[in-house]
Image 1: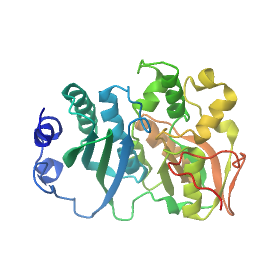
Image 2: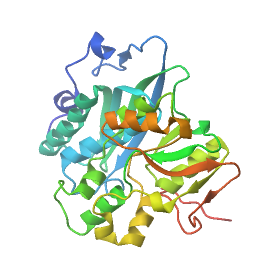
Image 3: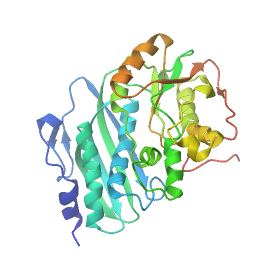
Image 4: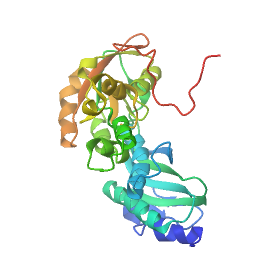
Length: 317
């Protein structure tokens, strides 16, 4: 059985360190040495993916690798940040080299797609989980924070919703073909990094939809100290969702299913056409779903019986 350090060297050390990636010293030492771009702020986030919580135990290893990085990169997209580096800590029940080979291929393929350098991490033994910390850059004052929303802003999303939840349901029903659009939305989410960059200077606030539209819109409203109105007739549904779940459950999935990783943002009506033009150049669209308003709460939908995903749902005392 290969040692921890042999596993790291074999599957997780990239051979592309250098000035072009901003890496003075990459994996293999106690710390990486990175070279941030002058005039930029660092945007840093971390996400952990746990087997049978965030992905099923039988999911293809290459898809698990893709997904573990994609969900972290989605946080950078929500801030309008340029992705640069990442670190990864992997906990494995055993050193299955076939699994590790496929996992690392999926992970490194997404690194290459977005120009991200893996600069360090750790390998330990235990229940399968993957923690990925991502580091990006954004010009000073340009980050898309949750707190910037303004009353009468249009609320919009970058794509159809409910696909993550629909894909999980499809997997539970025995579907395994990742060409299925719902399974692909669940296991192979696409971080909207180009869209986040395109929205800089237009959007007032943004967040990625990981816990469900309602839960994440509530985070935006709380941070911006505003309320919202949703237009349920404008809610875009993922391809195949209504056929799988029926109309009522499909709308419920779009509101609170989570795992969609589209961007949810607000912007003034005067910027709508320009934002749509920029986003279409990135290969995504703009879907208005409501507006921000003075006050509190979310109108247009009964939120009492609908909650987004929470690992530790609180209760009233």
